[in-house]
Length: 271
Image 1: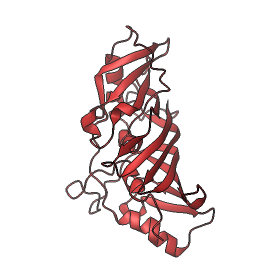
Image 2: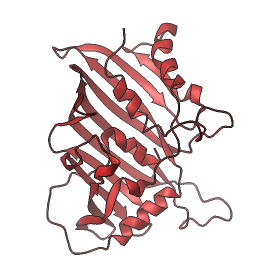
Image 3: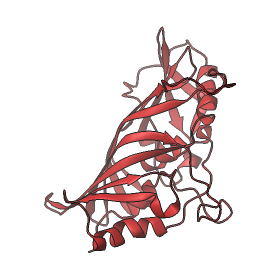
Image 4: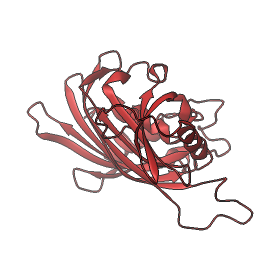
């Protein structure tokens, strides 16, 4: 999700913003440069997803652990690792893993800047090494989400002009998907560190900055009375698979919004 297609799941990053007044300091040009630099790197994220489906009384109905890797061919994108703490059997793989992998992959990701209103971003801290911004999500980028209930922020390093950290929070519960589902909690904390390995021969590091992701994301939501908790971790930036003849062909499909849309569509087990 170009990384930010992961955001349609929570929909975006935001800091532990204290809703302080903006500081008349660093220019938003630094933020825009960081977004441009991000676009030059690997265009997607792999991650491990843990889903807990709950009964009405809060007891556990089913727990799944899955890995999603958009750098793999369509039939291998999703891998079911565990069901209720045990290795999955063939029936569970068919019901969960195979069903996910049969869904068409969606086409090329939107540019990162299309999700955020960079021009109106506010500086909340101007430090020696980084600048933290409060950034609004564009309403047109999330038509079924009340973006005003998301606290959003991004931290940018001054020396490398790269995104260092993104955090997100929810100011109050919000309904999504035309009121069918309700999100009661969002907690996102992602850090991005420059890769340790040297740049390839002939490539200037400053021109093509690369980063690796680390952190966690969590969403609690209910759909049609069914409650589910989603947790994501073990993030890694990857290059999206574009194999010839695969279902991922841009001519046939739409972008897979962080694959989270798939997860949200399966808020309850189908047993």
